[in-house]
Length: 264
Image 1: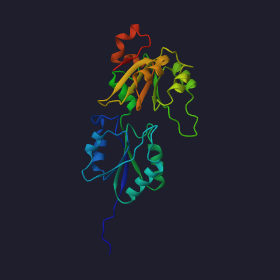
Image 2: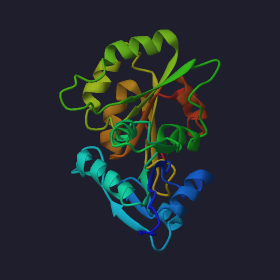
Image 3: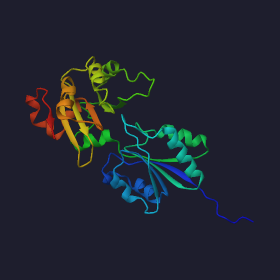
Image 4: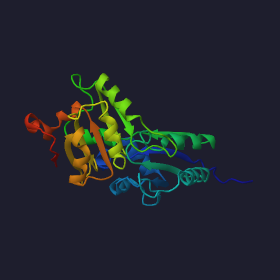
């Protein structure tokens, strides 16, 4: 008679937040500590992995926009095989798994394999970046809502209708938070200028929440020029809207602001 214990694997999708390990949720720390296998995205800061067990197997499955990445199908296969082998699997992603991660697709593949999934949310970089500047994403006087939008469409997808989005944002007083928009910045900016004034405030935040964070303030009309002059690169969040004026660094120069970037 076989008396070997039945191995019961499970999978948890965990958002590691924007980078600063102190922004991890308690639930995320617990999941990371209990994992026997961690499949880790490229944007997860190494300090986050200090919470992992010394005996855990850490597999780096790099995912970064515009760069060579591990095929998603291979990541799905690794997760399923590890769970079926009885492992406690954590799929660790930057930000939140369900905001421009592959969390939705990964949940679908795991469920199709008969595997239930738990999701632990993380702070998304669009929120963390603005919070680090002392500015909100919504404000009763300036923004009735916020739109998180990607500048990196799936191959074969025409992507966002930027002029239409800009017109909607202008009419409805919405803040736009653009992820993965650096490579298509010219196209995005020209589209937004068809529905938003050139003087619309913009904040750019690179490496949100990390010691290497850099930011610049500009206007929509000078967005491309500011990115080029200041050498801001991926990964950067671009926030468009009146709420940017709430940033600490914007407040004093605002009266004489002429589109010149304020960089920190």
